[in-house]
Length: 137
Image (cartoon, rainbow, N blue to C red):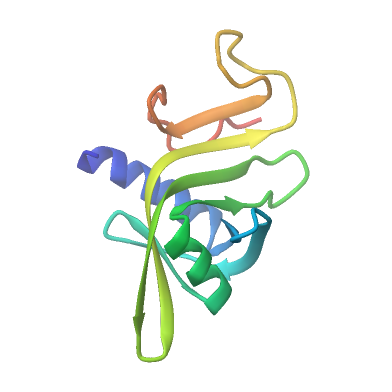
C-alpha cells in the first residue's frame, strides 16, 4: 500500500473518532462484537482487546471494524483487514492491517455501475477511487 493511500485512510479514521466495534468470529462461527477505542498507528489500526477477541483474531485473523454513524443520515465506516495479536504487560494488543474500507449508508447507489446496491463510497480496496471521506449532503 503506498504512502498516499495510508495517509488518506488515516485521515478517514481520524475523522470518525476512536470508538469502533471490533468484529470477530468465535470457534463455533458466532459473531463477537465489542466496542473499543481504536488508534491509527503506522498505517495500521490498534486496540487493546480482551481474551475472547484476542483468541478469535488469532484463530481467524480476517476481521472487521465498524465505526458507527454519528448522526442520522451519516455514513457508517467499515474497515476490513488482517489482524495480529501481541501480548505484553498483561494486555492483548490487536493490530489490524487494512485491506478494504468503505463508507456505507442505506439508500440508492450513487454509482449505478457499483457492486454495492446501497450508498457506498469505497476508500480502500481493488476498485476504490481513494476518497478520504463520504460526499457531503
